[in-house]
Amino acid sequence: MKRVLVTGACGQIGSELVIRLGKLLGNGNVLATDIKRAPDILKKHGNFTYLNVLDSHMFAKEVVDFEADAIFHMAAILSASGEKDPQLAYQVNMTGLMNALEVSRRKGVQMLITPSSIAVYGPDAPKLQTVEDAPLNPTTMYGVTKVAGEKLLQYYHIKYGLDTRSLRYPGIISAETPPGGGTTDFAVDLYWHALRGKPYSCFVKEDAALPFMYMPDAIKAIIDLAKAPAERLHRRVYNVHAMSLTAGDIVASIRNHIPDFRVEYRPDYRQEIADSWPASLNDAPAREDWRWRPDFGLEAMTRDMLDRIKRKLSD
Image (cartoon, rainbow, N blue to C red; front, side):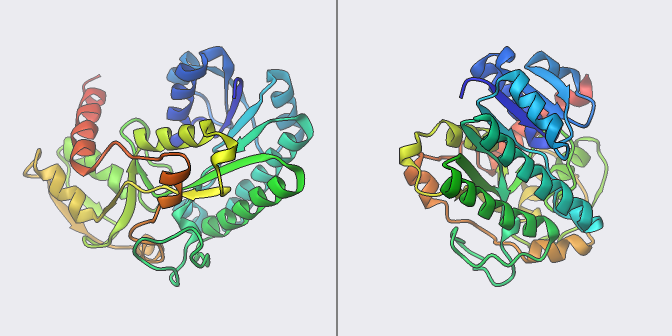
């Protein structure tokens, strides 16, 4: 992995991934791409160009011109946004991934790594310590596309020998970028509202447990997986887990620092999505095969989140 192209580089994970890859490989060896206008911070840590992942010819041209040997395919429509327009979610998530796989196969890209999600699970999966091989019967279009995407990664690995890798992310909490239409966006919103001194109306129940991960750990996980020797990997897709939290847990942690933070709970359609997902993941294969370990728990995350958001609000 020497020259990397990142799709969806303006997204919640992609934007921070580009910065970390730029520090790891050198800014000139990272090409950030998206259909959105790049923030200035991205331009400081890599090259940037417009790329619509649905345009296979444009995709191939950028890969060839940049001489990319690895692709981090981060472009996707997330769960809550996908339920508002499931046809668009299918088109972006499936056609975009197929184009990434095909350009990798045809243009000699050595590795394609793309995130999957806990959205692959449905109501019939175990709620606690859910393993990779639990039933995959999602109730959202996002989840459907992620299941199909995992199977495509496996197919291209078996059929063409392409080094495909993926991890199933839990909910991601970040101080650097706004939520991107996911069911777990409430976790990020809680911190911003608390520091702005505003009450928050939470769209999930107070006691609904979900798996979460702080963004620095999310970036660490995907880069560690990409760097892992191929001979150590026994799967194409791995669960990764950091902490299982309820909205109430996060609120209590915030109130240790901002005691008068007020929250009311008004569950909407996103609660139904959350109810279909596990409360915790079993990530033993990731810990065994490529030594995955998270660095952040709830209290460490809350302190760091509040510090980062304070700096942003004071700029």
